[in-house]
Length: 117
Image (cartoon, rainbow, N blue to C red; front, side, top):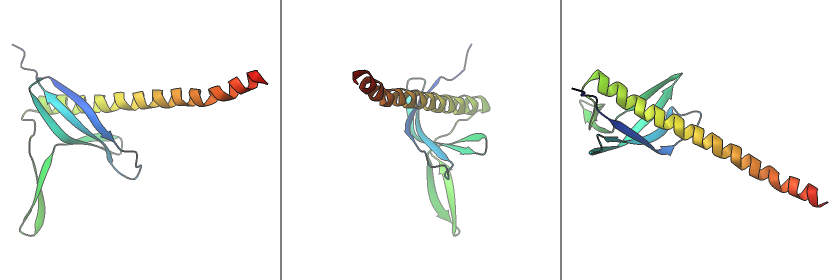
């Protein structure tokens, strides 16, 4: 019996600030049945870290955080993290491809203008 949980991640927003570790906000669908929104993807050094949606509160004068939802098993955590990272990398490639296409489009008017002269 296969107990592997299926995750499908979608990048909702991306951030380009090089000084910030926050790179994206994602949503994940679990088994086509449950959606989790507000998952943060951060990059610290060469490593990606996934932060689940959290509630913050004060306890004894100290700010504490508690995840609303989290994977229970190591395998589920690994698969969820990889789904988010994969979706982010795919989105980056799409953005790079779009920038490449945009650059080609910008060059086209010059070549058209040269041909008419």
